[in-house]
Length: 261
View 1 (cartoon, rainbow, N blue to C red):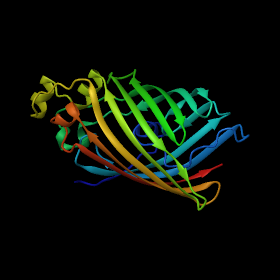
View 2: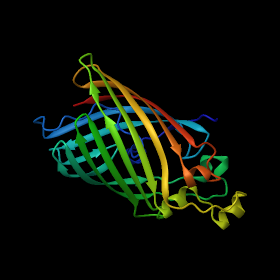
View 3: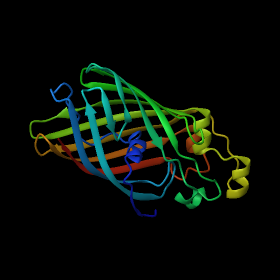
View 4: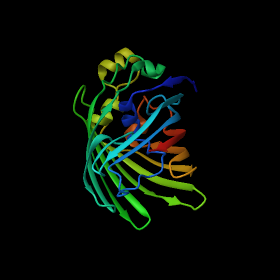
């Protein structure tokens, strides 16, 4: 495995990574009487250089989480958007994010594959809380730049807070990609096969991956918190069989802090 340090200051890149990486901060308390809620912090990640890679790299970037009147938001998980429904147990929102694509320079495996262009993302997500569990569903579709299809995510999580200040959020997830998405990220066209030396490969729609994660954090007081995260995703079916996939088991480790204002 190779290691490199990359500083990623863009808020939009946080939104892209946030699609796969839940927030490590304490959950926001809705209806707290404040029109404006702001949380700022920083996060360091050790993650694969691209999906399916066996090479890992360090990434560091700021965390920004802003919400106005429990309606409008800008955060690292969902981009900039609006809550259509925000009733506690039921949520529905739509937002705009950005996908930075993939560069063939990210790994020797990608040489000759060309780049996946970045572009704006349309994101729709909803949530349902039943008892101590939350079910979340998200769809993202890139509508500018090179079209890369649609990715659907389904998650199940729970959150436990303790009097000591400790909080834990375990979660499980499943991702489904359309034909365009799977081909763009895991397929190899005839021209790409010639330039890269990899065999041609047609990736079809289906379950892309399943995974599990856990966030463990500690609230120093009402405003400051420290958190750590570990996640595992297992690429399946066409994603696992792709000649671009060097390791079907994808791990991500993260640590950070946040300050609520």
